[in-house]
Length: 203
Ligand code: ATP
Image 1 (cartoon, rainbow, N blue to C red):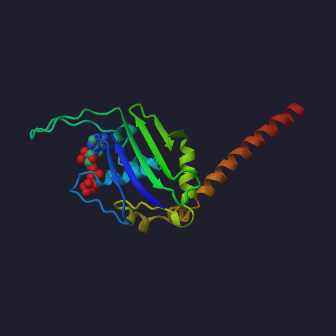
Image 2 (cartoon, protein in one colour):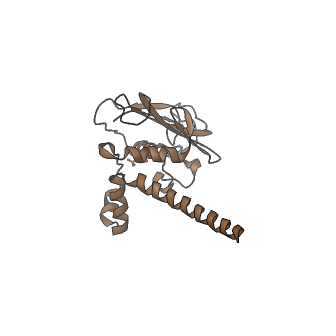
Image 3 (cartoon, rainbow, N blue to C red):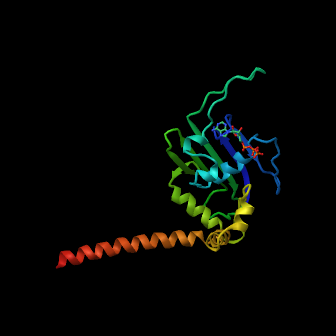
């Protein structure tokens, strides 16, 4: 499975729409401290459904949206803060590795200043759950993805056995089964409630 491009607009330090393409097998992003390299990794995490603001180095959703910049003395004009941020990740699906009938699969996420998030799959609005399930399914077999952030190697080495189990299960693509199990447990609980109510009515 091949990642074609990443489009950022209004996300963190990317005020202007920016498209990064990944034509080769290895891509390195190089830049001085604070130039936004980690913001790119976070954009990928975010569009794939990340819900933890801590993992995105923010406190609230608004922190992900371009916050405006004053005009610089060198003559660069000010860029006003933006009302929304969006990120789109495009995968080449000509080989059909993703079980969707499209040659290109685009996963997108938007956030507005009031904290509302929207998720899209090839321009159709979907639920977060659909994105999470799709990603979890992609996690199976050889196509798993891993994002190892700064300091995470330390964290993995120092993790408790329970945390380490989470890391391994995620890498093995078992999350989709965990999600299904949780969902089924919820349905079973609801059915039990219904049964109890029906019995009470019968009595
Ligand atoms: P380092 O190498 O030091 O880790 P980096 O190249 O990875 O740095 P990032 O940490 O990704 O850089 O980028 C941080 C920059 O992003 C900071 O300059 C910060 O001001 C800017 N930034 C973060 N959020 C916003 C936002 N909402 N609006 C504008 N700029 C932002």
